[in-house]
Image 1: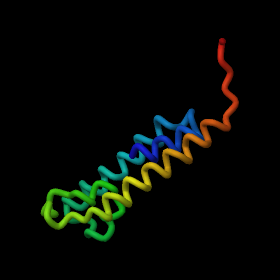
Image 2: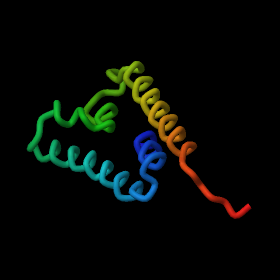
Image 3: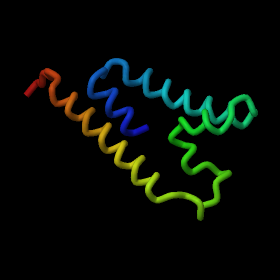
Length: 93
């Protein structure tokens, strides 16, 4: 979520509030739909929160998946910072 929000902020700063909350709502809706039995786990797997779901034992969590999600967050944040750096921002100084 942090990387996605930073990416949106870097390129669409006026839409960041709505789009970042919409992304969170989508992931929350996936969780609720899975809990209700409407969707199966393969669809729920699209959510970044499914990595450490309470139904998965801690001993079964993969460090490579955590590293991949962390790397993806850093990559998205870096792209967002690049987009932020390219914007023309006026200061009062």
